[in-house]
Length: 547
Ligand SMILES: *[C@@H]1O[C@H](CO)[C@@H](O)[C@H](O)[C@H]1NC(C)=O
Ligand SMILES: *[C@@H]1O[C@H](CO)[C@@H](O)[C@H](O)[C@H]1NC(C)=O
Ligand SMILES: *[C@@H]1O[C@H](CO)[C@@H](O)[C@H](O)[C@H]1NC(C)=O
Ligand SMILES: *[C@@H]1O[C@H](CO)[C@@H](O)[C@H](O)[C@H]1NC(C)=O
Ligand SMILES: *[C@@H]1O[C@H](CO)[C@@H](O)[C@H](O)[C@H]1NC(C)=O
Image 1 (cartoon, rainbow, N blue to C red):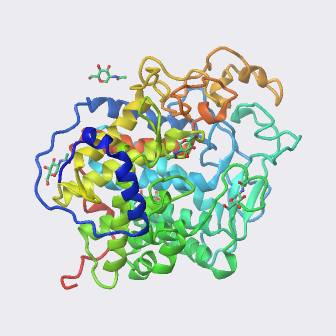
Image 2 (cartoon, rainbow, N blue to C red; image 1 turned 60 degrees about the vertical axis):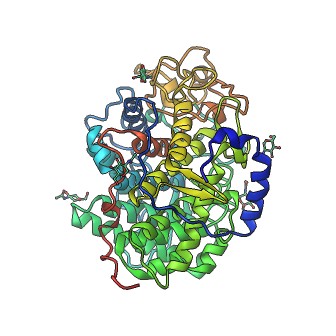
Image 3 (tube, rainbow, N blue to C red; image 1 turned 90 degrees about the vertical axis):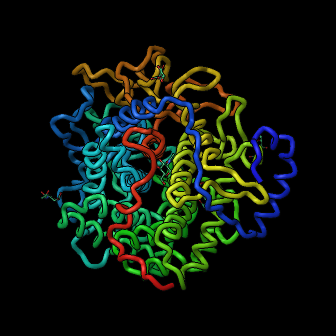
């Protein structure tokens, strides 16, 4: 049965009831395999590639360490050159990587997630990155991240005993000078840069394993590097799985817990195992990724909202998506098929949950989905969902499915694409304020971005810890335009606080921009529609014929 969204609105209540039923009992979801002639969204796709060029530049602005000659950000220079130098055991210290947001802190957990997202988007859409002339750029950005991640543990040892999990930051409520109590450009930092060490941390190690396994496929053309990445990913995953080390990396650490608290690690087990299977072709990882116990602990045996809200803290949806890709295009069969079929049903339900009439999530009047229950920084969740939805549409189309079903209703892939473009269009300015939330894109965008380097002029003068605050508190726009930065976003009423003091609305993050980049490359029509079916599977053996 095909239904328009309009007619559905009246029956939203009924569908919500149905959804609750579906959430406790997942019925069969049958994909109709008819070829479709779909109409594409009317949006000019060129806008997505323009925004993509900008969104990627944000990563250049966040670089720490000794910058390459042409980094493209005139107001940024070398910084953090002594990071990690107090440590005896890391070669070259912990110089490099990316600052997370408007502070000058390197948070390795979301950093690794951001690299995994960039790699994933590249492995799906290499032709599009080529077409928008960003292929080498995205690889360079990923390598900047992986080169750094390789410094954060002993990547030559066969067994990892600890991981450096953060550089800089602040001890909550501390009065001493640090990244939060000072307002200084990274180039001028003159306060201590403490390093956090994780002797346990399945989510940190699991995410880093995902990052390095995915990039090992990206750098297929350099076997030395690729092998180093995959070997390290396996060692990290062994650390993550060590029964003695299953304590969250952030718990009880006041430098981390208030900022990037991890609320569980089974999602990283699922996600890490999935990427390790893609990176090695070793079936033991597929066995783990389809293990009922892990799936259950990651809360995916029945559908919950968690199965739809991708973020740096929740990789359940992205893992389900990739395992569904495997089912659709590779079909490993017995004994994996039963669990993969469950994963497929769950991610299909997550796609249903994005549809407005079901009202599983709140929406602003202006049309933004609020996946984090009215919390701050809604755009990063919306961008991730847009990426997943358009990717799922591409998976369906590539497997010659016209759409998917939500209970009794059949929806075409066009519904998914419309959801994805509606969210990204909102971010790019199709909202009640006519404001683009991506700096430097469109005529009107945030001018008071919460960002130390962007808010302090690069005028050769050094502002001290406290004297820098005059720049945070200035009513004038930032002197440096931080091109491509997607800020936290509006509130539940489509209002934006263009206020440098407001982190939740006016600060960009690495993870947020990584999701935005992924969504934009997925949506642009530059380089043609659809995914590259094979690149992501290039390290796994051809599927067996009998299953
Ligand atoms: C492969 O990567 C390594 C590590 O980054 C680099 O030193 C080396 O020059 C690369 N080799 C080639 C052929 O690009
Ligand atoms: C971090 O997450 C854990 C697990 O969900 C929770 O118990 C803890 O209170 C959280 N910490 C903070 C500061 O939110
Ligand atoms: C929507 O927002 C309201 C008010 O903040 C909240 O009570 C409600 O639980 C939210 N609904 C959903 C579906 O998230
Ligand atoms: C988006 O595309 C339309 C149509 O090509 C164009 O008129 C508009 O200026 C573009 N917007 C931006 C912000 O580039
Ligand atoms: C759908 O797939 C067909 C080939 O199977 C391709 O020609 C077409 O461009 C795809 N459409 C989209 C929107 O991806």
